[in-house]
Image (cartoon, chains in turn purple, yellow):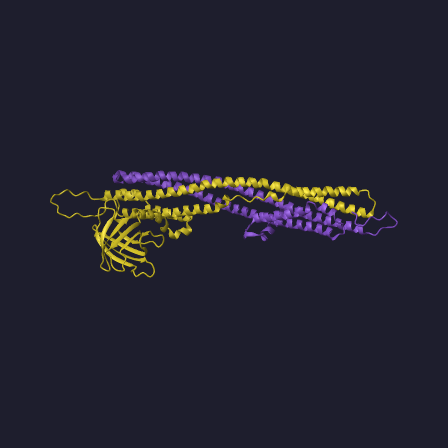
Length: 242
Length: 361
């Protein structure tokens, strides 16, 4: 369920990338800056909400307006944070997709490297065969000795290259193993991001619930202080008492 | 000096223009096809060299040319493989995205805790108040307290999720760095392989040249007995050590990546014939000139002379405009390459010098 929600969020994020630098890459730094600005605005209003409200009568329009102002600042903060999280998800998904494409290409390259190793071995065999044939020919034509010296050098170079091809194929295989591990870690990072995104959405819902409850309390405070005094019951409280 | 530069450029150039049409498809299959062509051209050359069979020198030429083509194809393959690998591995050079932990500040939880304490305290103050209005207020406070409690839990859950994300993000970054290091080693292996292949190709050119020399030396008739009465003029049958095949035949200027000095040829066709150590030939060329210039871009001349005992063959030429001059034919770094250097006496609006490398047709 959590995973499905995460996927939905990522899919939504892909569809509405905010403030993109280009089509596929959101500007995370700008999104983070915006989120921090909205947080500072909200914090300055939220930190002393109770103290400020205590100085205003419940039915004073400034009372409900004060709560609504903090609530809106909270929504703006959470919206900016949601944009950042979406942007991070888009970037993360793009990185993971690129890593998987790279892995695919490197696995193909590993196959090619193995073939090149076989090619080098085949070339080495061909040069060795030539060397043997030339050695035979030199018995009849000593004038070919000069060529034989060069062919020996070529044979040495071919051997060296075959060894290098062997090493290259080996290191390519090792790099592919590292890359597979890297892709696994990309997936793990993305899963953690999805969890973070789900947790954020849950928190966002709770914030809305809290401000709704806070506003409901303000309305209750106002309504109970406006009720006409009951002659049969306790003496009336003064208007506006909290 | 100029010639040296030109030949050095030619060594690089041969890797390019010989396979111009193959660059786009420089896959392994292409270079393997070139390899097979080379091996077929080479066949049993070493065995045939001993037999001194007719046409062995021509076979050496064909094998050398096929090797040059193979080397160029493979160099293109190695180059494009290295380039593609470097491009796609760029991803590993950039640190991976790690979400900012600053967006879940502890201050948020502090604010909520503060509110929760206030609301809880206030609700408790009205706990036993029987007044219906106060009861309503207490119930509203309790709902607010419940909302704050749920919010507090949600904030803690998100803070845990943010902390949990930083662990795989850090592990990912370490893995990226390690993987990038492994692939960086591969990049140096590619460049080493390219350098090695270049050396090998040069060695093959040297080998074929020495093989041809060895065969020629073996085929050469025994030296004539020294005779003091001989009045025959000295004659150059061929340049010692350089097969005539390095000069004789049809040559052309490559369509792409041609090597030249001075005026740039648009096309050049050169034919060199040999008979009894005597050379004759024709060169027909068109040069790319600055637009608006009055100079005639066409050059056509015939040349002739005897093959000398040096690698550089110089012959006298006469242009179609009766200008006198000379042409040098210089064997290139590979069997199928020939450097041409000509100059003529000055004539109004006529090109009088040219220097370029031709490839054997």
